[in-house]
Image (tube, rainbow, N blue to C red; front, top):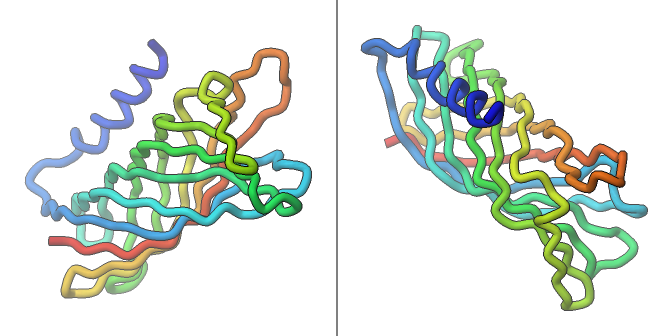
Length: 188
C-alpha cells in the first residue's frame, strides 16, 4: 500500500503544478551501461538499451518537468565468464526536473520508479529465473545532462542510482542497480 501511495504521489505531483504551460511529446532510445552493486566476484558492465516516450512540461523559460515511460534492460556481466550475465528488464518512470543553464543545455535530476518485468541469470546457454528473489520495484534517483536542438532532436546522458532489489530474506546484502544511459530522442 505504501508503494502505491508513493507511486501515485510521484505521478500526480508534477502534473498538479501544470496550468497552461507548453507541453511537448517525443520519443527516445539509447544505450544502457549497467552493473549492480555489490557486483559478482568479477564484474563487468552489461551493455543493453532503453526506449520509450517522453513529455516535457515547460513551467518557465528555464525550468521544466520531463516525465518518461521507458523500457530499460539492465543487469551485470561476469568478466571471467563471458557467457554469464544477470538480465533485469524494467518498465521505468523517471520524472526529471530540468533546468536550462544556457540555451538548449539542461541539467536534470529526479526520482525514478522501475517495475520489474524480467529477472534472469544466463550462463552457458541456460536461463534461470530469479524474479522471485528480486524486488518487484526499484525506486531510485537519476542525474544527467541534456541538449535539445531547435529541430526537436535531443541528446542526453544520465546516471541512475537504484534502491535495494534483493528480495532474499536470508541474505543481508543490499544489491543496487547502477546505470549510465546515453540517449537520442525527438520531440514532435
